[in-house]
Amino acid sequence: MTGSRGLHVERLLPDDWARFRQVRQQALRSDPDAFAASAHRWLSDLDVEARWRERLEAVATYVASLDGTDVGTAGVSGEHELLGMWVAPAARGTGVAARLVDAVARDVPAGTPLHLRVMAGNDVGVRFYTRCGFVLTDPEPDAEGCLTMTRPR
Image 1 (cartoon, rainbow, N blue to C red):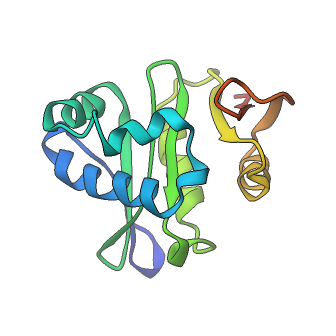
Image 2 (cartoon, helix red, strand yellow):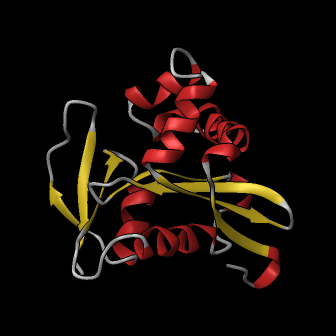
C-alpha cells in the first residue's frame, strides 16, 4: 500500500520481528503514558525474540514508513481489537494514523465492529478515533485506566 509523500504501510510477518521490536519499543519509550501498564512488559520480560514472533503471528500488525523511516504501527487481534496504535511525534498530522486505522480495518470482516482501548485523558486520541468513526462505549476507565471505543460496521 503506497501513498503520497513517501507514505507506505505494510503488514509485518514473524520474520520482521526485529523491525517491529524497534518501532514498538520506540513507541513505549517516547510516549509511555499513551499505553496501558501491561504494554510496558514489552520492554522487559516479553522482550524475547520468540515472544515478538508470536505477537506477529497472533496479531495482524502493520508498520507505516514515511520517506523510508518507520514512524508508526498498529495491529488488530483475532477479537477485532485495534492494538498498539502509535505514530511518531514528527509524523503526526501527516495522515499516517488514518492510514494505519484503514489498514487494520481491512483485516476485520465486513459487518464486524472494530474495538479499541485508549488511555483515559488522551483527548487527542479520543478525538482522532471519533473522526475515524469510533464511538465511546463506556465512559468509565477499566482497571488499566483505558476507555473503550467501537467502530460499528
